[in-house]
Image (cartoon, rainbow, N blue to C red; front, side, top):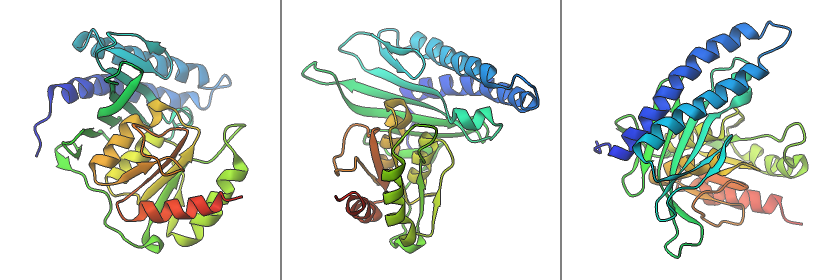
Length: 273
């Protein structure tokens, strides 16, 4: 077992505190499902409250670090120090509908040495409040679920593999492009799943529950922690051109150490003109 660093403890404390609030609010959302007004306004407030809780905890521990929030945007810190990338509620639609599958995602990104923007992600934590699962990773220290080491799946055959994805919806995403990829991958694998939280999809690839994952049109707060988890668990993450970036969001393909290249070939062939 790896000793949990002070930084991960700070991140986990913030996530657990916000997660407790989300659990309580989730119970209220389930009751609000039957109301005429609906739970949308309530969920927005729950999201904002979770973000504020995480901000308060992380700011107290690292007062000179910057932030990139889903809701609050960019908050500048000391440009020579890292920043936190935070999604206080990944899987908002699930939360809205009373589906217990959502997570808090927190990542740490380092400034580039040349002072021009941001570089590698060196720590990440994804916390599922309903199951109380805390997935975390630090660069070169592995990926973990609580105190248990994570490794990507050892499956080597596509026809035994379970693949996750995110499906375009309500004007978001390219349906034709996604369909071409799906038609290429689905006949080759044991199943395709769409559960509605990219952060948890990536954590589950790291944990070996999925063999792979693809999606387009995400944001840094959706994927920064998950990309590090997959890599530290022995997997690969790239964009659709095969580039390994600090985090992939506009286009992301994650997989175990054997199947990533096969999935990439299927995806690339699907998108040929």
